Image 1 (cartoon, rainbow, N blue to C red):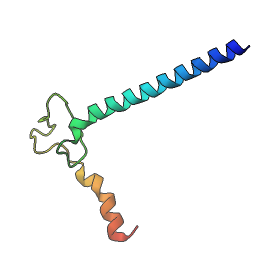
Image 2 (image 1 turned 135 degrees about the vertical axis):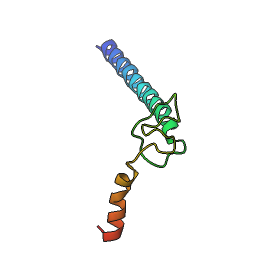
Image 3 (image 1 turned 90 degrees about the vertical axis):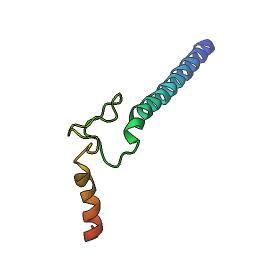
Image 4 (image 1 turned 30 degrees about the horizontal axis):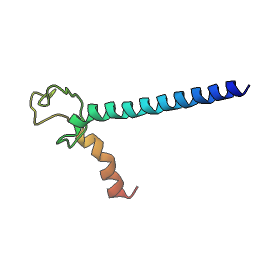
Length: 83
């Protein structure tokens, strides 16, 4: 019975360590994917191609998104009307 308990504890530790490693790798992959999006960004991206940082769905790299006004409107209204 003692051997079974030891084996179960080792299996639980192995699985726990594996989950931690996967979580760490997942965080790294998310950071590597989003890091290029954050370089010199001042708004949310509607379309993003990591291999083409100058890509814009609007035909100009100066305009990457027209949703900035939509994303900042709630902050403006909360501040203005003390919501």
